[in-house]
Length: 280
Length: 214
Image 1 (cartoon, rainbow over the protein chains, first blue to last red):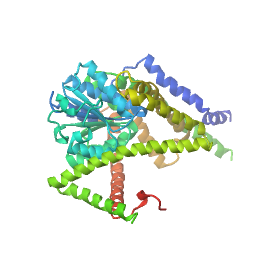
Image 2: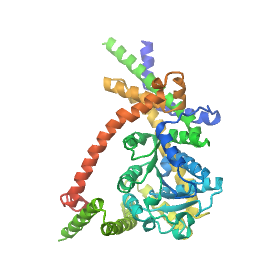
Image 3: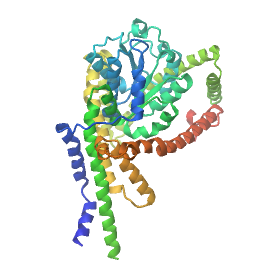
Image 4: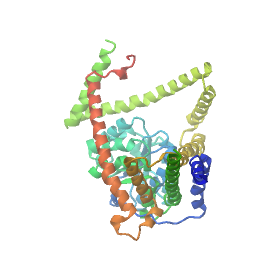
């Protein structure tokens, strides 16, 4: 009987103990890294291959940093890894955002990696900035990029940048990658891939990744990075482990903890239910 | 008349944009391109309208001392501060106070709010994820496989097994087949709904976007 009472107590455990366990599980790997290897999945390998075949110092990769601060921990490592991949191969990059809160984040990511690889602004990369109106912007980019972004984010006309010479619309963009914590990736598929045939790759949060497998299967997305795991895989492929790989240690332990909680919760639930039945 | 003109504009422009999709003539695509540009301009202008509305709503809330009116003061105050710094000194220029506040205040605050999900998910999983039926058993099994297969620690557990028995392989299979099939069905249903709604708007059957009608 005392055992049953113990199970009942276990079911009614103060949630703050669970919060404490989660906090400890997240923090510990930052001090004692597990250094676990992350296997590469086909959707991530496909996106990596799509960037890897882009010609150096030619038409730019368009990177849409469509995330806000809320989803930054999952998506910024992807942005940094993709930029490192592109810059390490001398691939030109044009950065833009469809999210107002992505304005400063896109600039920060571009600047950080450009400095790491000594890329020259205007020659190797350019930051186009933000324009409101998701679908209208995407459709207009297919007509003429200068209709939407006549100037870069700092107010300099695009005609002054060598990287933008001869770049008019999607016909001159070999690959577009969107990193989004909302439905922007779908919008790029609907309004850039379908009407204009633009090659689109995406990076989304882990909870969103399941929604995008249909687009991957039909070839509407050339590749997909899902959550921090996707970022960690890409970092591994680029050979520059960073926040994604570090975060996977915490995520490993948290997933184990949640599974343990589910199992323990079910054992306690069934033990309590059985004892109540026996008691009549 | 007051409703007739907007309905006629919607019908003509909606129809024209449909024609643009199917007729690859340069005169059609040039005009459609121009209209798409108008779209971005109208949406940009609507942001100003949004700011005006935000001020109006919070101002009324403060004046009438409604529940949580103190938060409205904070909202308006912070908005005014960001305007004051962003206007004259720019938003992303090097050394701009706006950018500093965005990166050092808004970014950590929003990231923190989102990260609280991990705590609530763990607590909710413990309390609510019960093996009560065959369906919940299926969900529980799939969830555990995917959760283990998505992390390196889970991969280690089955590394010695043949590939088709490893957790990452099972995870990818669940994502790429049953999950994708279910989502494709949902997407197709949603797409048909969007098409029907688009036609209703173009034909003037759906008028709620005009406002003022129940």
